Image (cartoon, rainbow, N blue to C red):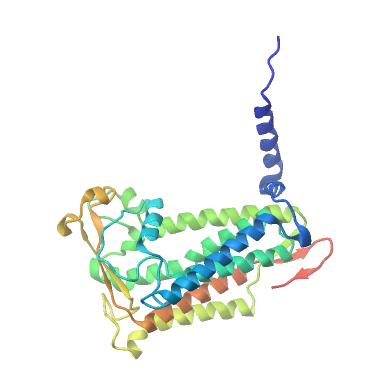
Length: 326
């Protein structure tokens, strides 16, 4: 009496074969098209992005510290840190801590228009959503976050501590591997690398569907990059024009929030809340300054515009030879 394969495993085999031969493109079978080349999942996702934008605007308006400083409440931010397995250190309270609402608004808006644009040049539903989200995550780190962390280390951590804390992590009573794997920059680089791999896989699927992909680094792209560089330079030299900024480490690249590193035991911090770490951020200091925040947000906006403009591809239909430009 011969054995028979259970229907469930037959179905799994069919799904496996579909993704094995078609890659990411197979996901599009689960995104049913609607009228006017729209699709249910993209429309829902765009609705969520618009709702997120509306929420950010409302919170910026009602914030007691003003729209420049308004951030997600600490509980939301600590949930985010917990997901990343960052120790929940009981720092001194400030009204500006976490991710600024204006930052989230900028990324959500860019992601929304990215989905709209990719739909117009022929991207399929799954491709346009994932491509837009991955590009949004990459833009969170490149170029703004990498430049910001490096400058903060150079102008503040290095003079005060003798090493670049965000680049090399925690070298105090820890192994080299532990220090590197807890480095902010190493974590950022790993996340960004996986996002770029995802973009490559999406673009590979798109090319196989007959759409030729070409990025743009034209005059507009160069202009946006120049705007980002100039805004960062202005941020660095703000003390030349305004002597009221708070100095920390060096006179350059002033901040509205500074952090102090030290041994947790010396500051009475329970090591059970630090994930086994003994050294790190022990205090934070808030010095609100509108010019600094404007420089921060403007440079971030230029960073987002540059990345999305440059890496949202021009689609050229190989069959129709029709160019679609942003």
